[in-house]
Length: 394
Image 1: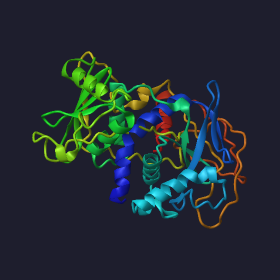
Image 2 (image 1 turned 180 degrees about the vertical axis):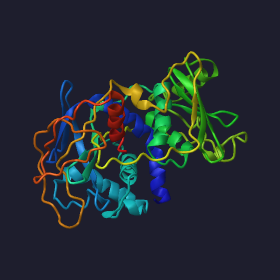
Image 3 (image 1 turned 90 degrees about the horizontal axis):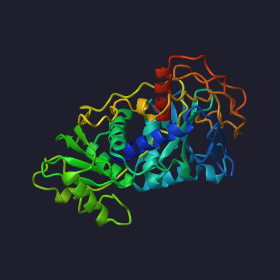
Image 4 (image 1 turned 90 degrees about the vertical axis):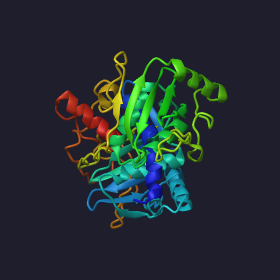
């Protein structure tokens, strides 16, 4: 992976993770269907129906393992379906990122998610959904809807998204990731004299320690907001009245202006903020990919005795009532393989969700959105974890 692509992944990971968590809560246990027409949509039915605008980004094939960009529109879908994929190609070409401008190439378990994270950073669309289309093909979409709007930043949610994001994929620069999260999410990020990065929210703050490799090693959470942190938060809000809580150059100095006290590798962070995820894209590809190794050293998130925020390592437990895996065996999607080129597909009525990650999607003779019946009840905890793994694209 090129350094440029890795930088896009770094910048997108935390915000994508928070957005995917929000998306997962909203669609848990829902049936779905996709429509790749002039008005592309991904619709979830059930007690709380949700319809989102869908953008085909690319497809992942299982055998051989390849990635195929949606802008190489072999199925001749209408332009609105692949427009965002073309945007990714154009912006990738401007940055000289070969992975974003090559129509098809070898993939692995982690690469599709990383390419989608890069697409999020370039397009500003922060939710995604991977839909199994049968025959070992997974269709990766970016999706958007006003109903996915996040609430004001809360300190426990911010810290949890950071800790979880570092387990989703390889993040080489935690400082860059945190700066981008602050920029995208709109919370103040300040540099303390001792080199600690301080994350500020209306309900508390977190002091983040990084090492010489710019990796997070410790995160001390405090709530409620008080003392010097409260003053810093108020100053940031008054400095940006149009965007309460947004970071400013006064609160987050640029690397070139980093205080002398800052440790060499952790230059004063440039205010940036992130958001994601994961994911949406709750449908699990088959076979289930192996989770990537956590970035080392894993951040040690500490919280005061009175602060009972859930442990960042287990985001799924905090996110919702145990959602069920929502894997579709088939969904309209282009076949990523160059030979043979499949004909355009049309969606049809969805069926109940199949089993979790360990079962491969069932191939079908016709490219429809049919889905197999629900699997027998299993242990609640594994099902919940499986669902969120798929939702985050892992």
